[in-house]
Length: 277
Image (cartoon, rainbow, N blue to C red; front, side):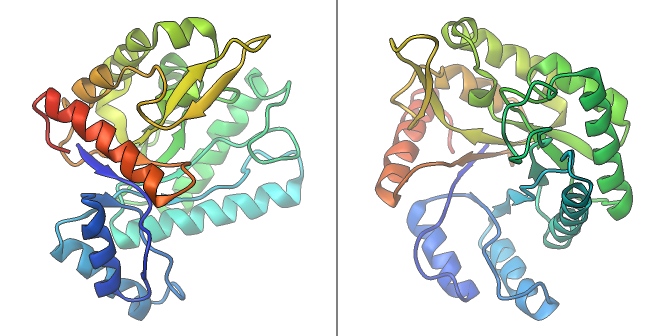
């Protein structure tokens, strides 16, 4: 596995970007923001990453391809296709989005999100995106989520079978699957289930943590790795069984200092297990 996360500092040119990455100790990265998508802008960063031995983990396509608004939905489908094509160009392990939402906001809970009709919409949208690009070296993935498919390992398997495209794969964010006290208390079992069922399809993972508070009713908070209850010993042990280039990406923290603390915690757990990240 390869630990990665956001990179702070000057990133306007490949040398500055690589220097910033090296300061973090990360071995996998998100592709940096470039002035445009021309070959002259993109290719130098791709070459620099390769020369530095870095894996480009993900290209984000955050949007709502199942929006109830037809115009917004088409806009999202076009954007996802564009981002998947970009992931193919730069050799990213995956292009990642959530499935979307039947609500107005692109990532919001909605009563229709977990219906059979929405499942079918997700299948249709993913097929449309993949078929428009026909990638050969990257994959389109849906990040696991608490209130939209894929919300469990079994529902991810259902999507894989229904979508029926070789270039559809898994993006595992286990914290997003913890949406009940049972899953929180027994997250080690949840992790083992996810890797047992989805392991061959996993292209990238997110590294977060979660905490169940005493606030009524059920209140779950995302926190920095090491401050919650996610069983990182099990997470890293299972992740280590996959392709050694599989990214584990830190996210959602407010500062470079917080990312450094999160990385230090994960590396300490890994070191205790005899694993290099």
